[in-house]
Image (tube, rainbow, N blue to C red; front, side, top):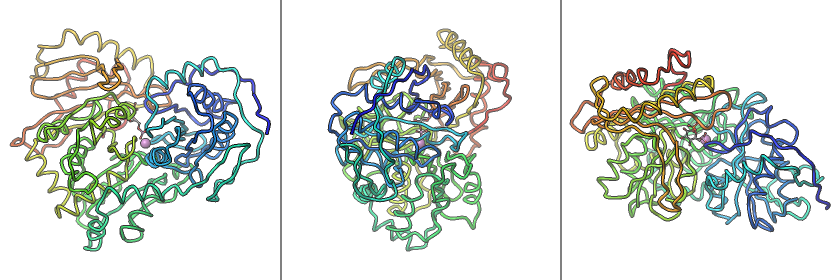
Length: 543
Ligand code: VG1
Ligand code: CO
């Protein structure tokens, strides 16, 4: 088979963000756009000859086209084998597991996660390294540098692979094995959780609903919850992946899962509700009459993980992204284990997990996971919750209340201003940055500023430094305001404002969250003038 070397010209905008390269589908459809990026990835790696590459995606529009191109480019670049999920599907955590389990060189995860799909929606591509986790900044910087000067890519002139059939085929000299996307993942989950106890929970009449939002978790949730664990058929809703996510927004939050939330707040609703995002790495947890914020969920899972067989020896440490609330910090303190604060994005957890300094990680954006893979994992979080519920035999609400009565409550919210003018958003952040030095010691709305800075992370494992990771303004009473610009949006800028206030164990735990945080919302507006600068009177999304 002759390898073709195709001439190309670089694109200037292939800088990977928080989680890979994400753009509108028409951007990816430009001539050689995808090819350039994949070749730039391969050009940035050393020693891939004869090695195994994992490829899979969340099934969104353009997945099928992109996978065929990626397979040909991989073959022409000398990979020995590609493992690809049947139908081109692999959830992000399942892809991470496959990379680790089969000791692959790395993997291409084709997804724009929680962003909408379809011909006018978003597409994305991310490279994961051999530990199963997203490539660290050193590699993504190299990929971007390469993409700016690339002048050719390699491919083969071969017919499409049949992705519907499990089994082995060949593309040039490279073997392509189409694998069951669910089997290895389901087997891994059985090593971590007490499936008998969860089966018993369902058998006792416990009811749940799981919304796959027409995205990738459908086959996983059906096989595990309804298949292995015996939950009644119909427990999993919207379980068939659709290229456009049924024209929905596969983001498991209270805006896009409002129907489920409303159902859980009624007496006739189920005991437990959960959802996952486009690529299966996020989770939404709602108990009857109790929404669990992702930050609280991280703290609760860490405090109760020992109830699941996979964590019965205890956890080594916890890591959370900087904007995530400090609820987990109190658990780590009580357990006497390490606590780490990292920049936003799962790639920063990899080193800590690899050296065994932390076991559980989480982000306020509905991402939790553990050392079982190197990605956040939506179904994992749901199964750990189910395991805890099966052992404790209490409601979600009772467990959350007990947690607050022990550790105190961190009232927490995030306000997003989506698709605002990039120049205005950057000016807002720059201006705020300029005010930081003068803030400590000032009293704003009755709260004294303890510190104000732009977060810089020093990775304790590889010594690397990541600066400008978000503005933090901390107050003497433990309250905090964080502001940063999103690195996953595809149009304009998205400004994220994260607000947090600590209420001690014997304090008030029943306030309305937005009311509890009103003083901080006021301070933020005074300092950042969001309304004036963005022309928005209110956030697009409140989580
Ligand atoms: C967002 C979240 C971040 C998450 C990232 C990828 O990034 O805030 O916590 O890791 O999405 O999640 P940003 O830069 O837009 O704030 V996923 O499920 O979209 O891969
Ligand atoms: Co995701």
